[in-house]
Length: 636
Ligand code: SF4
Image (cartoon, rainbow, N blue to C red):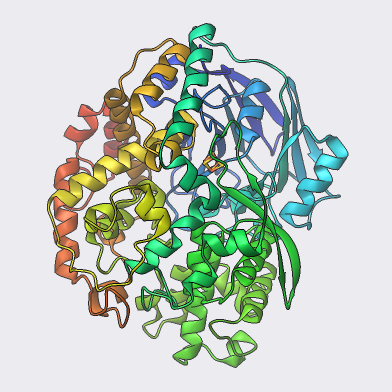
């Protein structure tokens, strides 16, 4: 099968059985790869209703047909499981070099079941696959373990690790790779830790079958030239995602003090330019990437100094805005701590800012927390991170994530526990951005921006091209009130099909989304590599199929799943923003209901937000509709 390595590697960690299964052509045709493979395998093979930490949970690493080929930014790997954060469908994406190495070793997918009897790591070198003891690495930080493993095995191994957070099953533990690339969301690292797998080391020396090598090579070379010639190329690359900090703040969507408000006074101390001035040593990119957005640098704070990749925009938003750390050095140090401990910086920042607000409101005191905590205080961040990862004292509660923690603390603390479905909210405050609010509400893994980034739709005029986004508007002005519009639903849905399609193809989306690299180039590359002529529109149809499948998985796994799982916390519908360009705005519950009505209707879902049988059949998912009916999931 052109483009693919052709094999699924299955490992039962309990029995030690290793099986190599040919990749099914029909699976590739209907679900493309990456995220599509994750969704289909989870739906077919996940035992219904198990605890995410049950040994029977699956851990899947999947590449796409373009991963590892001469395609701009083809180093992405997709991971999937049943989420310990939400209890539903989970996936998370990671850059670096791991996916290409897995394919060169001969595998499109690595699927783990069971639980190793003792701490272990997976050794994969082409056809040689072993489960090896990991006593020497267990307990080590994610970055240190990667370094040590590369020293022991060889620098050319691509190594994925978890940190102590994954070992301790913190529900937002991440996977770490390449000293700064993470699959951060949904607790995928906690599931790997629950299987007692500290790391996966891969070295692949094989090659991949290509339908038309000459044309694929020529198209690949041409694609690199075209990306480099895009006007946004020289603006986007220097600062990476941190470059949007000014714009986000100036239009008043920058999460500040646990999403209390949406504007920060000190944003110029923590933006992309501050990284270049105070931290950066070099650019760092993923496999085959012409636009290296990673910034590798050094930070020095009163708590210590560290080498770190980042911070990316999301980390700036959650630690610089939400926890209000005042300097880029402090934000970078918090980033380093999370990387080493193996924590998602987004969820960790959200949990900490919620804890501080609870303390300010007197809902958690010194007795429960162990000391006073406050915003703008690196020591607070350091203290709470240590507690969380040790699951010690208050840390045991906070390791469960904001939703579960708020359920325990009660006293109205859920109103400002900022999440959807149990996954903490990322770096955009949406009380004057209804389309983006809808995108968060309906994202399949919980509150995540990468499924649909539609702020431009809410803020027509504030963003027309990458220049506005990276440079910032330059002025902080009161924003006009955004309208609740029926076309928001269509806009969000289209974006939910476009962005995740890259996760199925196994490549980075930034070249298309941020630089405007044309879809025709991907159609051409896909054809020359796989031999299949598929239009972008047809591939978006597959993406829609995958989206409905992931919704079906959550409907099956979460009791009572449906509309009530799609709402943001009460703060966003009852509390006006107290300051900044969007002062006074909020989105009342009736408007949120209206947005959901439009969205469900446009998707062909029922009013409870479940795909109807008719929609599933239209998308070629009749078998899924049959399973849901037999299992008693109430689809109409
Ligand atoms: Fe990786 Fe950034 Fe390049 Fe995307 S743009 S492949 S995230 S370095």
